[in-house]
Picture 1: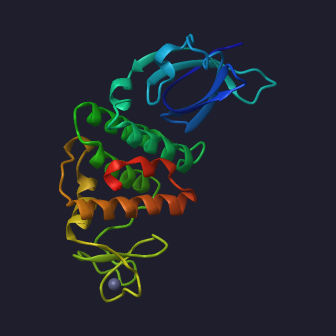
Picture 2: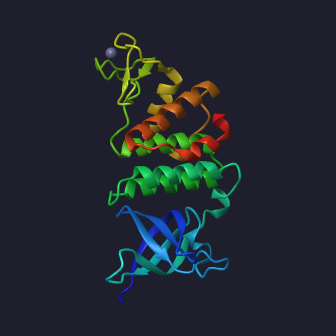
Picture 3: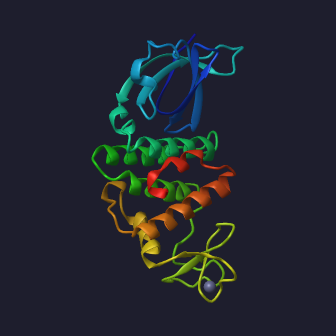
Length: 245
Ligand SMILES: [Zn+2]
């Protein structure tokens, strides 16, 4: 059987048939691929650290005609992020990123930009940038990549621009200005608007603390609710984030 190979990031796995795992791989051009990793749920699996969450590797696999899923044969670690991802203060942010990718990224989606986004978050986190802000950067960009992010200062109804205060529409499609608001209660103020605009022009590694704790919570809540609304799911991992409680 011919071996195929792909470069990918591990974004999830679960035990299958007691001894095996099904591993979800985010490839850079072909969306999420599911493959069976035989024997990988046992204590000493032959794949070692290759299957840790967010390991970047080259995966070699083969397909049998009667099986729906490809089978992992071997792989090489390209970059291990194990120390970064498993650090207690960061692990839940990475669970959340994995959850969003698994539930929100459509199958066979051209995933090159999402792949680069996750790599930027991983590298920035490894270099010491705070996860608290990297998670906002990740959420705003995943919405932008999928064409769902609104212009933070622009009113969805009257198209007025450079508003210093806006209210988020209840279906999260956009924001409205003071004149157009009609019962919307979630207020996004100047620094929150500026932060969202700032992410357009800057990289993940440049993120620094600009929001007060109250504003931070509002921006997080808006992005989380928007992803949940469009993706039709609830982010289970979000409840473990200490900053939000
Ligand atoms: Zn308006």
